[in-house]
Length: 252
Image 1 (tube, rainbow, N blue to C red):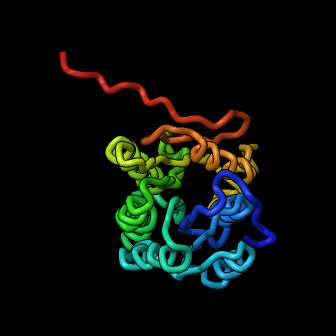
Image 2: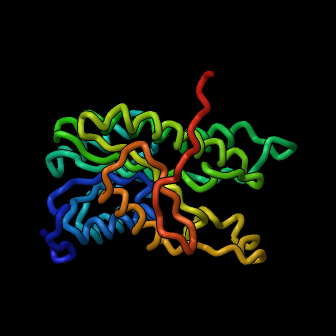
Image 3: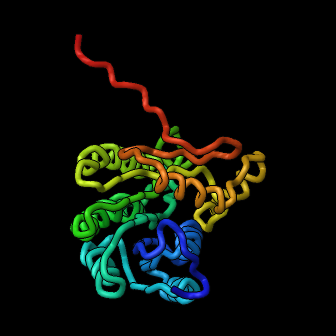
């Protein structure tokens, strides 16, 4: 255990974080490492990822979450380097920033859907065997408040994040009996690079931007809870908790 790490209830656990080179992923890596968790950072940003990995005495693996083999290789890195895997934070994501009108671009659309949806699907598929080998664990996928409300300024982003929430709600009860908890983290606009294209509009309208530390607090609250299949919202001025979906009407 390094000087950066302190003993805690999660000391000795192993975590994989996709999109870990900056923003929410890097902040979660630092918090987990501070509790004694061994961290594997997976990202396409090699310079940023290696920098954070060195900071937390972790391991970096170059990973494009659009490629199933890259996710599998990231999991194998955790097993080879630290002996197993207890937690996966499937956090890699991109904004879309366009609609379905004249600005629609099929290539940008496929890129956004592949990173934000396929990346979670491939990530879950890759980590499940490693978590089973440990007798259980946690999967947290980064979705967004855009999954829980309308996002007319970025409908493609809203669609792919809603898909992540739908996937998590299905996976939660499916895997909870084997000790694997699957949940979603749904932050509002946080102080990360992803809000760059809309920052001026947020500032103009006075919309509050979340400190990344608040998102990390919510992530840790998910780990400390006992639910599965939940979508935890993170919005300014409110304590984070699972969103309460209205029940679907049944047949009469």
